Length: 117
Image (cartoon, rainbow, N blue to C red):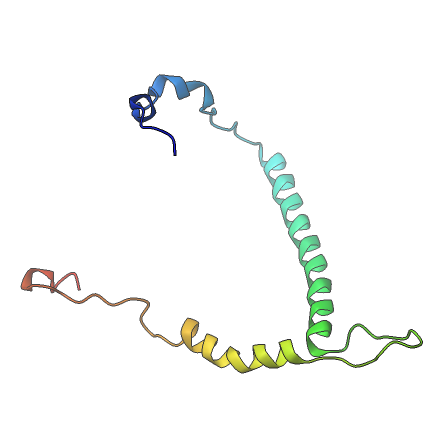
């Protein structure tokens, strides 16, 4: 464990960080802003398409349909242990995350706290 050193408690001066502060971004023209937003939309759509194929593949693995073994001498048995376990605890998880009507509740400690609670 390192020994205590008063130099470790010294905070750097604010002037040292002035170089790290970035200038405000320049304003964009309407056409430039439109093309920027268009690129962002195209990227997000492409990502969703890639993600949806991954989700379909994952769903097939989860349901036990993949991988299909066609090799000679290999077993075609599929274990459903993970799926069965997830399906058995899913109702309990749903109650934990979605069961409460109130996210939190405050209990007043004195008469002055009634309005805040």
